[in-house]
Length: 254
Image (cartoon, rainbow, N blue to C red):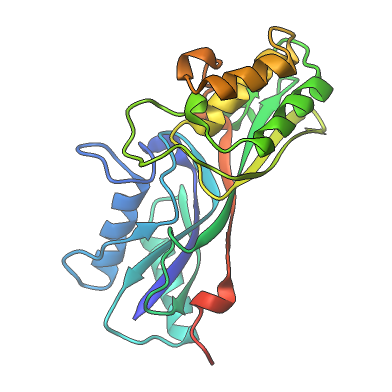
């Protein structure tokens, strides 16, 4: 049987989702606790993506296989038990059965990230915000951000040495919003490259402060050269906030 896990995590203490040699990761922590709880040597867990070091996820999905068939009550019990085993910075919302061929990563249709920029000092949210001291032109930033939906190759915003076949992504939404004392950048795409969102945000901040124009931003995309884009912003303010599936295709038929 294959099961999906719906979870969230504070990524501050981890070197990303994926298992790293001699470094703590969310995947390794979850696998160890799940294997211990189910009295198994190792239960591999496959995530819906690979968040970078220090990046958070308020919505994340993963899958694992187990020979037993569990009803809803057993899944709820396992959820509670797993939460008691896991550290406080990882929470399990639910565990549920899916089709045997459902895949947390490959079946995901869309992923949404949000980046938070604080415009004023806040004693309570500061660990999860980028405090930016310069004034920003949000209208110009949104004008440039809209260009992302017109392109497919985002080599300019990706780390150079990555294990990917191509740099093609389909961006459906890219927008800045003013929310109380912060600016929130929301971007939705079918996939993301390593460091992509942080590089985009850093470059858009250069637009907002007047160092770049929208045309400059467009040319940066066309040049397909990471050296042309802006500096990557810190990971602490980046959250994976939504992952969309065609649930009718991956849930077992009743």
